[in-house]
Image (cartoon, rainbow, N blue to C red; front, side, top):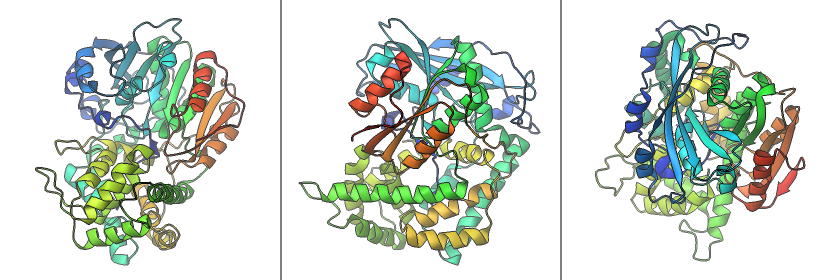
Amino acid sequence: MIMRLHRGLAAVPSSLLALGLAATLALSGCTSFSDSVAGDATPSATSAAAEPTATPIAWTDCNQQIQKLVAGQPGSDRNLSFECGRTEVPISYAEPRGAKLPLFLVRVVMAGQTNRIGSLVVNPGGPGASGADAAIGLSLTLPTEVLSRFDIVGFDPRGVGLSTPVECISGGMKERLVAAEPRPTTDAQLDDAFKLTTEIADGCAKQYGNALGTFNTVDTARDMEQLRQSLGDEKLSYLGYSYGTTLGSTYAELFPQKTRALVLDAAVDPNTDPKTNAEASAKGLEAGFDAFAANCVGLIAGCPVGANPRQFVMDLLTQAGQTPIPSSKSGETRQATSGVVLTAVQAALYDTASWPQLAQGLAAAQKGDSAGLFSLADSYSGRLDNGTYSNLFDANLAINCADTNEKYGESEIRNLAADWGQKYPLFGAGSAVSLYTCSVWQAERTPLPPRDAPGSAAILVVGNSGDPVTPLPGAVDMADDLDNGVLLVWQGQGHTAYPKTDCIKAAVNSYLINLTPPVDGLTCPA
């Protein structure tokens, strides 16, 4: 069973997806969540009107450690310096002077800045992805015009990475999740999926109790306002990808007068309920696979998976379901089930740069070697080279479920799995079953507010006509809902748009630097 991990995740260099910042852990002085909050702590309410005092950020030079991590990456020859930071925010904004929660940050500064504007705070999506990693990765890829005017600042949101990570799903359980049947439609398969989901929810509830609801987007947006003040910026400049658009638009709703320039790339639709969003996700991923297949078949050198990639994958899923496929990687003991195969496919659809690896990996797996597919699947699930996992799974589930009150019963999900399994043969059933996750999640909920952000500055919303993860209608809806939303469209494939083409790059750069948004609805070619 593929867990629908992401509302979306911006691509960063694969070696930076899990940096393993052991050295910076010591520098940041991060503590565990259990050290920060008593087991009976409760999350804040959305209506909380408390005005806490921002805490200064304790910055430490971590240039040497991070330079070693990025060595050899494209862009690593830029003259960049890195600082690691630590600060604290209220665990509950209803009690701003109560217990605190430590947050971890990374700030990147390019030498030779002129006419500095301030900080550009970044979030790569998820929820559950590291903003600190994103700051490092984006500093290697963002246009130098932006780096010459902004410090790039990324923070791990509450519950993520090095910011008091929520950790309640064992590595073994994550292996089971990835390996499980990805297209459950029979009664037995659905029973197994419901049982596994409930086991996870019960384990997290037992470990965290009422405090599990602390990890939510509304409070993270409030954290971001504390960080803006601590950074010394009069107003917020922000670049958020995918789920980062949910976080950014929530910030704009809560603090419209504090917005300077917000870029919301690969927008998550603010108007859809979880069921509608899950079906749109299945539909988008099917379209993304068709785009991959068409590209592969059109290769001059020939497609490694033949003239019918969809049928090839269907056959491979059957093969792996009957006899899991071993890996040639030294020391690897895992074998690829159908769940691993489809997780790898889904991972590759995020970025067209991964399409060649997917085609080669599928072809190799059919011949008995799943190493290439495990590489893709591991990047999606947050599995590190040493066999351990980041807390991407844990944080993704906790935050997604804290953000909604919607629940779906087993009977409805069984019907949806049958229906969507026919409409969307690769991804439909799995998307339907993902709705069960939050139905059995035992935590306080802090639903997302409507987001029109009256009184905000112009907010640039970017959508991609070929985005398989957050389809274009989401960006259209978000730009329409925001009182001052401006829509920018890219006619390309893959997840997220900036800074992939000159047209997109020019429009976003001008907005960030000069506060000059493009004409509403501007469309950039692929």
